[in-house]
Length: 361
Image (cartoon, rainbow, N blue to C red; front, side, top):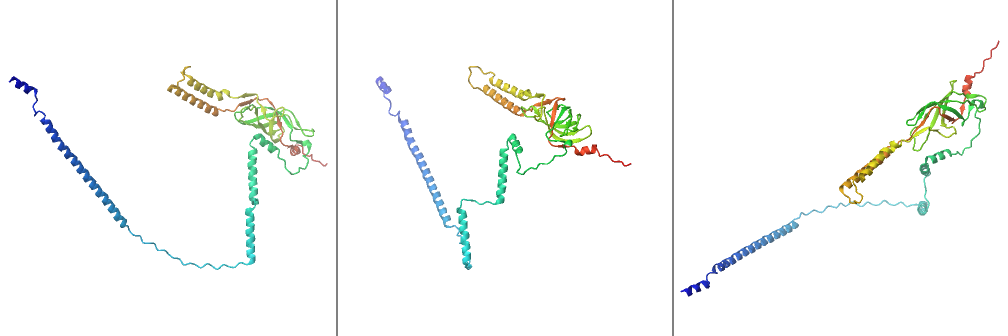
């Protein structure tokens, strides 16, 4: 009995692996059913897809055959008009036409061009004006060309009048300035003649000392300018004689304008703000930068941006702050007036010295 039990324990039973085999057998037909269903679905989908394509082709063919027919347009036939009978030209007309045709061919083949005289004169005038503008760009060149223009007409000599009653062009009137000059703004000024002015023959004094001069001076000086341009417009003598001078003022040596006693260039007003902004820009670009640190970080970029903006502001301020210099001329300064045209006193002398009346006793 013990031996039988041992044999029973050691030998496994033949029915222990049956459930696993049964499960494998049941799984195989299930998978086959699923595969068959998928194949059926694919076949049906393919069939319906083919039917749709065939329907589309049928519709397209029907549409192609059922297009509406367009009637051909009726072509209107216009009657052919008979050409007018050409007139026979005479031999003279044919010769004239041939001559004109030859002339036209010669003109076209010739290298010369024909211009209308009126248009040519206008074009020449425009070219001359444009050339004058191009040449006369410089103020000194323009002044030289205007002063150097000489007319082709001959000038006849004539007498200028009685020399005992005339002050000719180019005479110098010595005077003393009574009002000071500040060139910031234009203004009027006054001077007094301190030396007598004689007639051309030296026979009599026509402008006595104490005569009043009235004039105007110019403002808006340029950089580097040190003289004030003065124009004397009127002269009044103590006898009540009025003269329209319209003559420029010169200094003691005859140079144009009057030399300034003091000049203010406005250096700090022009360059002070710009220099301060430039210094601030340079300082902001160098603040916090170590000697051996060459790295470019955000703080350095910010400093450079601030420095560039300050430099641009300095340049704009410098351009806006171009202040012209201020020139001062003190009262009591000596001056001269260059007489620009002849001064004729004949009419005034006749009024002041009337002819005596003869009395008959």
